[in-house]
Image 1: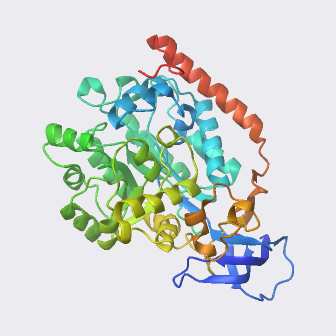
Image 2: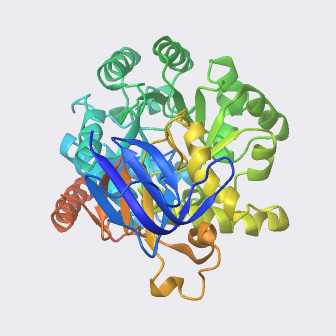
Image 3: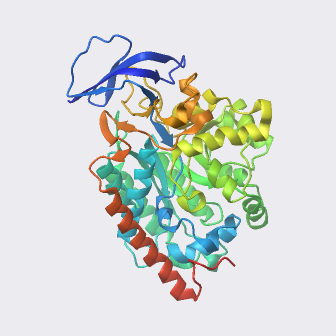
Length: 467
């Protein structure tokens, strides 16, 4: 196995159980595993030696919710000022034109952006399968993650409840329940790897209460637990969703999840803004997790997650960037700072501390994904997943008093180096082995085709019209 030595770091922010910050620190890894960390390590050479003088080393950030395909529909004028339901109705008309190459390019771009922002592990929730297009679209995301060298947790999403059955999405992007369950089983059997330091785990993820049937929720939970994989869905994102559930289902969203087997320590929800106190207590008691997506929630005016109540109740909380169509970026450092500032604004003195916020995106996110034994902190026995910031940058001048807090207070948008499992995947701020300009060009061409197809079909110029 290859070895890695990082030496002379200005500091290593470990986020371990003691929140140690190691000054003039070093780290030694064999294969993916950290075998030594501290000052004055007895190692002088390795297959790769990195002199990290002036660098601050952090654990890799972990993204708990994304829709990578949405990278192709960022900054769409017609969808800029919509609430969630109207936003979805607008963009479904574009997403119905997705093809396998689009999914691959969007994943390459979105995951590449994440790596460049210090994210070493990402989940994804893929649920749009246009009629007549390959069922194997999740495979294209997995191919992209492998090429980039990112630790990946894709979830096989689904929509079975089209408009003709009272759901929100158009029928053209839904699938039958038999097709969904068959392909979900295929994805798990082919790709899921629960081994230590696995680079790929898979989950089961019906889209939302307003896009799948009760039967599909029940059968999906049974399938997931049969294979021992985790479960993910959207929940309590907006008041519109709550009203939909009350009118169509006769219960609030969480009660619907309880009726269909979607609660437990193997379940995490995206957003979780509109839970009441009783629901928060029940979630903490059963071990549910929540992916907090601050930028997306603010852009869609969905509301602010009750972060302090969730944490006090023992609910597992991690950070997610959400799909790029509701965030317009795949930048974990950006969302990390957004979370810190949002809750300072919302809760004032009870807002998140810098340590709590960084913990959400590292240890917290690892717990949400059930991956805490391998990732989430820098300590012996964990994976060598990390990123570095150069303390000499002009934007950090006058701020070098608390290295652990720097990304939260001063802010940063790009990592200088990112390492996943002991392998350098971002160096000098650029993806290793990837022609970024060519990738950007190909991705924009794919985005243009999707938007043009929707514009021609509906007679609306999505590129200009704002409604």
